[in-house]
Amino acid sequence: MARFNFTADDMARTRFSPAAAPVLETMLVMAQLRGLAAPPGRRRADRWLLEAQAAFPATARPLVDLLRPCMPWPDFLDSFAPDLKEGLEEVRATPRSVLRSQLARDWRGRAGRPPTWIRNLADGDLESVELVVRALHDLYHAIVEPRWDSALVAFHAEVARRIPTLAAGGHEVLFGALHPRLRWRDNGLDRAGFDGEWDLHGLGMVLMPSAFWTGDPMFGLGDGGRRPYVLVYAAQPRGLNGRGSARDGLPADPADGDGLAALLGPTRAAVLRALAAPRGTAELAGVIGISPASASEHAKVLRDVYLIESSREGRSVRHSLTPLGAAMLGRLPAPPRSEHRKALSRTVPCPAVIRTADPTGANET
Image 1 (tube, rainbow, N blue to C red):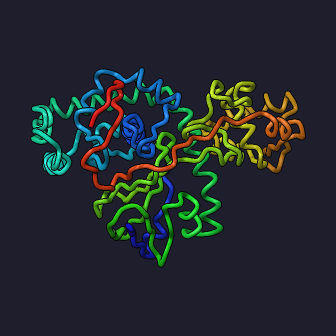
Image 2: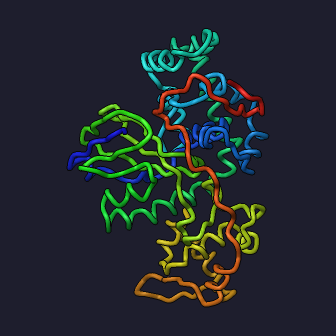
Image 3: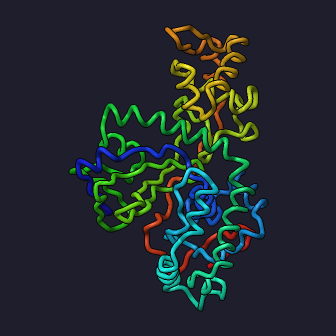
């Protein structure tokens, strides 16, 4: 059992991340590609992962060589910056001492010597650092960027539906609702599945829902200073309407059996589902992860076809479903839920042998 101890300051400073992190999501995509979110012996070939395998760029291949077949992976690759350029700059600026210590620890127990370029990376060689930065950059643009709008929808929808839980029930109810392996007990967070105990040094914990990750919760460990402790967990965009508007953590693709998205388009379908509970325009925009102007435009289209109705309350406009809109939500199918439920934690020791899927389609041991 792992435990994170919270002081009063930690509880006051525990918060949701204000934005998704492109570099972190890119690393989580890499973990998904290597099968680390699926239960051992059962890896499901989800559609977006098959597409990602096909789109995997040759320039991202250094990540396959750098990252061992199971977690944990070197922490310097985890940037929680909300901007891709800023996140890559954080990776680029990793001190030589950190590179050396983390790569030495990561390679311990692996067969053979690391490739020359990785040994050079441990020495802070600029060309080797740029090789890693380019790999992250190109992997993001090939796989993450085409799905980024959907990822933002999932992220903002998850945060919007969890904040009322925190406000009404506190940390105990919130952490218990995020995942069965998490439990709030005696002013601390317990996580089943691995061992250790950490204090948060009054910095609190940042909660980071991920649209791409489908496995068990993972932790980024803080340094007691600038780097916070971070809980990464799978976003649950089905909370938009309580039925399931997404698959594998991403808003539904019409081809995956989402009849509402096939009829209205994915964003407009998300708007309709979000209005299962009446919302103002600004709140609606925040839930979906779009601008208020865009939310207003989508609401007008849905209002014109009698799926929602709008009423003015002071200076704001509030939207709600019509009987026809409610009937449509109840009759058109949502896509099937992901079967991924169990995964290897970032902080679980690496087994001696694990079978993984290389993004190129080859298997490693």
